[in-house]
Length: 190
Image (cartoon, rainbow, N blue to C red; front, side):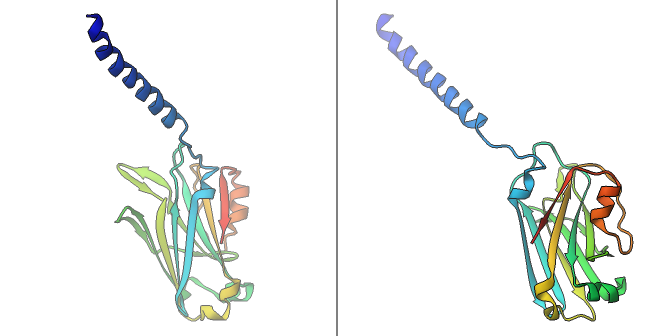
């Protein structure tokens, strides 16, 4: 029996070592909160033609504290363009995806105090996660975006609080978030 002890001790010690190494590896994995998510957000925008702007976004991580509420993307435009703009001048298409599958579509937008704004859900529904990945296309009927391309700014608003902020004409989303007392949000501008 003493000669067989090594046959029992060696595999047991290897298993214990693997368990400890695995535990340490998993416990050192970084987790991301909603507040830190802004550092892993990727936003890309490109001009498709002189009238169409295309925006894509993707989160690099998923927050450990879950998702809920609505997120917003606002295209900031020059004041003189905003003053002349109305809902009939812009066509939009919003789609959210999970992997290669499109899971949400909308064509709703609103002229904001600073440009054009969309809202989209940021939640888990059944097996689908809405919000972390999507794209937004805006086509301006009477405008040539090249005339003010350098002045355009894209702002992504992420919230992680259930709220019922409606997008009304000429809404100032910054002020609406403050007025509603929502403190659980951040903005990334590009």
